[in-house]
Image (tube, rainbow, N blue to C red; front, side, top):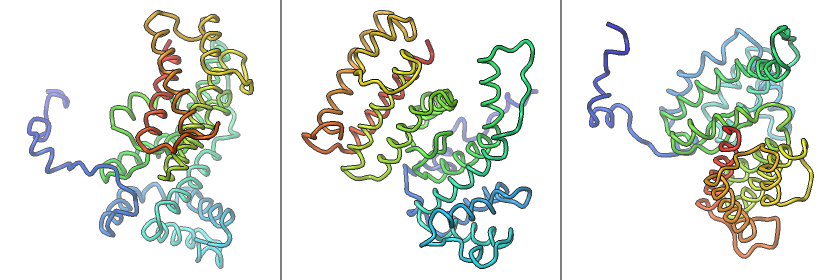
Length: 313
């Protein structure tokens, strides 16, 4: 009998699943209890072991970038691996979500640096595009493993962020995350999409400020990211001042994005919605009113769906 033939009790019993795996909603790290944070630490601590210098680099990076706060107190006076590990665990257990995610950002940078300059040889039967894709996957391999583990643990505890190749993004419904956000952000993780990634990172960061101004900024950056995406498809680089509607038309004329009637109607409607929201609540023009979380999330999701539809052509 294969392993897949055996089903867990919770797979067939809804009430059991609710008891074993409760739905906690989306919570800030700050809302977790001391016991919950302790549990999360033990699920993740093997990623912060002595087998590399990632924790050392993370604490060094955090202190250098934020000298006034100097969160790595032990490391500041004794720059050793042991001091770095002590500070890392202390920050994990005691500091706010903003500090923790900044620490993790430094840790992720350390992971990516390890393979950034390592050579990878091109096979004689590979195209340039195939090699670039393989190189990109190689350089993100360790990062992706860490992100998968972190995201799984955070999901179980309802933490409201998700680690992607572009940085931390707001956690969405699990289906949206797995079927739209993760595949799209992985596809955009190569250097040629750098300008798109920059504006998407700014959009996600602004959204997570959880303020009226932040939501408005998020909408502006999200639409700008879409424009940059279309500019690269049409012109090979970002930077033109053309609007989304004009860029969609040119991209379709080039055959770079779907041209069927259904897609064309979707693109037309999406453009109208995005331009209306940016004009009404974004920061590109004088606002009629501030955006709220619901509107900002809608625009982010529409932009991601739009890009996904184009990539899957």
